[in-house]
Image (cartoon, rainbow, N blue to C red; front, top):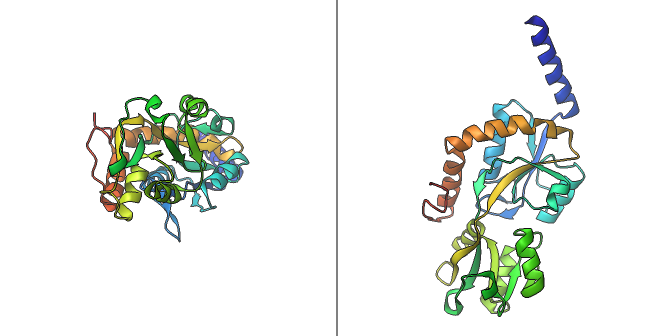
Length: 259
């Protein structure tokens, strides 16, 4: 028993030496899941990650590094240990080890001006319209391949610039996560003019991911075990709900994953 305790303590000390702290970062422009407020990264993705790391007694630092593409570039070389949170994509799996338990629901929606709304039932219905997508955002390999073959979908700027292009009529629709889109509209008082049409483009989820090039990836299993417990008691949904309420966003329980 004494030997086992000594071994555990020695192992913990080695892990901490290899990974003195977990550097956490996120997309700075994706409220209400995560965003940069000018001083620090905030949101339920950050809150849940730090809750788990604190429970596991793992030192951490939440670090703002700039735009989303820079976050991914830093993760690709191990300068960021944990990305909070994002969608699983094959290209990202080349440099990220995903925690396979989903952290948050994150449906993807097509936003249009209310007065220029069009019928949307399948992806093919977008083919006769010009769309926008923010830099660094991807919504699955299948949709990416379909868009490349059939859609006029421009990748440029941020959610802010794309919503402004939408309002000016320079694009007909904007593809973005439902929560992020609704948060932008609520902040700018545009919820009456721009709407998310149904059905969703994709009923997606967001996941945590450790950089494959970080020694901190050894904490992945422990992180996931604690995440499963918090997901089971809906701590993640409570955090998301609080953030949605802060942006004055009201969504039905099915959207939030209450099934």
